[in-house]
Amino acid sequence: IDSKPVYIMHCFTDARLFEMAEIRLIEGRYYRPEETHEVIINESAKKLLGVKGTPGNQVDGHTIVGIVADCYTESPLLPSKPTIYRNILDKDGFSDYVRDYGRITATIKLKEGVIQKNEDVEKLNKEINDLAKEMQNVTPFISGWEQSYKENFLTSEENLAKLFSIVSIICLLISIFGIYSLASLTCEQRRKEIAIRKINGATMKDILNLFFKEFFLLLGIALVIAFPIGYYVMSLWLEQYTRRVPMGLPLFLAVALSLALVIVASIFLRVWRAASANPAEVVKENN
Image (cartoon, rainbow, N blue to C red; front, top):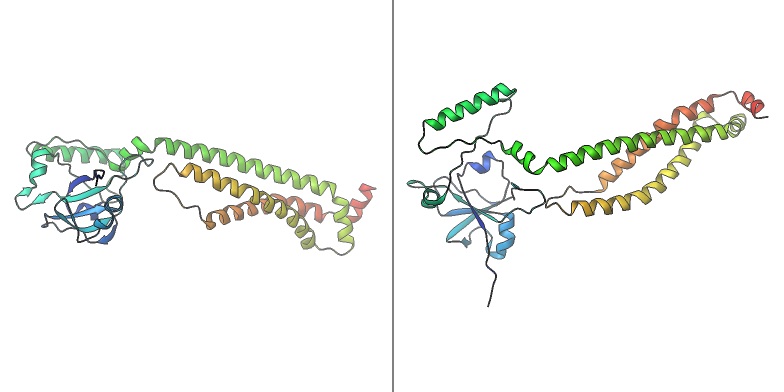
């Protein structure tokens, strides 16, 4: 039976990397520093291997002892590569494969607050370079994971986020001015109605509720139209990413609540002024 070859990336690493990089363990355990024939695979490798990708099974002559979450070290538009993590050390030091073919990379994790200004970065780089000079066949190349990932893969996303923020603020301001203008026009056209209602015993609360009901009805109609369209468009946009932000009900409820607060803040002052006017004077003006 013909079968397609399975390609899985091998990553030789110290057992301490998983804890230092906070790589989440999903199933099984991490291999121990002294274990040289035990391996860990990521989620993508487990999906690729199927039933063989479970702890206790063999892969490339090594025993799977754990499964970890996928790590994204490339563009967020690309899926995580199926990876087997193997111990970089053996009883004689570095494994034969690493000694013969590999390039060893040292990873340093800084405590929070160590770097607070540019001078701290320069001092740290100098200390690393001095340490590298004391070692043989070491060429220091210092690169920050977070900064490097942002510069290589997240620049377009950050620019898009800034653009969306500006557009959102502009749309919000237009909405506030539009709602306030509509409330002002409605109150001006219905001043006589408000005055007559007050003469007939309507309270300030009754008049405010009258306007709020009308505007909230418009809000409901807008949400019924906008939410399905927005959900569809955002789903199409998020499909290009391998890991997506969930768009659950709380997100849409928060948007609806925010819009409701904008409506209340926009029309309350204008309606309050119209409802506070002397009804007798209002009736005379309209006559």
